[in-house]
Image 1 (cartoon, rainbow, N blue to C red):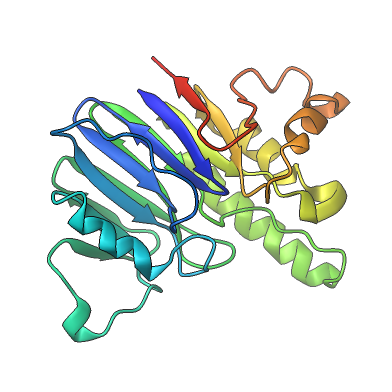
Image 2 (cartoon, rainbow, N blue to C red):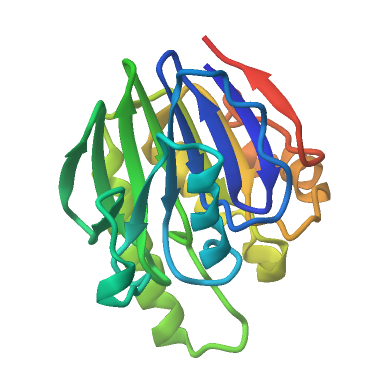
Length: 231
């Protein structure tokens, strides 16, 4: 299994027969796709930094590509194609060789749990513990509860790779979602995302006393195009 960081929250996961491309919206370079492998674009919601319509044009390059899109990404009836699949939160689906389970985002759309080629991959989209200093206490408490409720659904799952937000805009709360995920889910490799180009958070989280002993599966992201080969 090869993981490639594309940009922001966009990652490609190359498996034996399938290539999963999460939250690609046209920024950053796609990795080389080996001939004959099935390409799946999975987009978690309609925010411009997670989906833009121009990626549908990639169907001309990857003729076997299919798209799995959160239901909040809207299409006119004449735009709907058999290779575009719409999904809603807290459902399970099968598309070709993929088994797809969705969680409900704490922002918009879904998070994905995908089983393909014997591997299980989690991509959070914007499912995160969003804690903003400008919000009132009740809002932040409700956000914490909603995030924990969704991540708790991953307990017992053996994830081969997970992509989880680590957003520096949250100030001192930037790592809370990552910490809770590492405490309550099991993944062989965990990749931070949604860092807005500030990869220093990968070093910063390693300096926290409360994260010591928890970061074994954590992978530092440093630049677009970075690759990892996982078992």
